[in-house]
Image 1 (cartoon, rainbow, N blue to C red):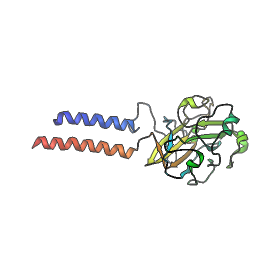
Image 2: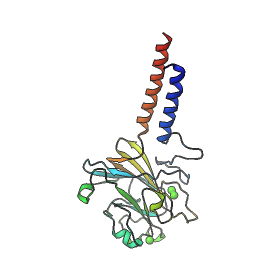
Image 3: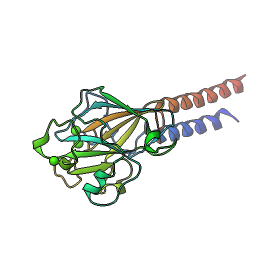
Length: 233
Ligand SMILES: [Ca+2]
Ligand SMILES: [Ca+2]
Ligand SMILES: [Ca+2]
């Protein structure tokens, strides 16, 4: 194939791959800022992606940052539970994970296989939010103090009908997850998705590794250049 044919093909392929990785965003889309110090109140476009157990031993949950006035806790589910809030909270597989009042880099590890999760099973984390001013600073989970519960994944999983989480790849098997803690009907909701930011490792996610996509793009350009040089000889 000639250079004239190869270069357009490779460029199109690279753009498609980068777009799939979120590096080239749609018009108006804003990448969520999940890297401290975060841009507080900057509305962004969340992925609502999910993460799954890799099957490789313990999963470590690390608290990264929180820019929020509400207290919140991360809970673990294996499915979105039915029923009223109290029943949903009672159905959590794990409630002793981290709050957003921890020191940054605080972490906790657990073995999903001991909770019935097999390799490839979704680790469905949820954010339990205490909207009362009385509890600001609470670190221990208290189900009676929770008013809101948001699940990772699609908008249909949440009572207010919007996506409440963004997921970004921090490297191989490392997922960075940021939550929006306010209800869609709350006039103060800002859609910044940095109200409670965690990392999870090792997990798999539907979010591609940006580094890998760049390598693919560079490889395609190299292929096109090699073809061009060969044709010039
Ligand atoms: Ca409360
Ligand atoms: Ca927010
Ligand atoms: Ca915030």
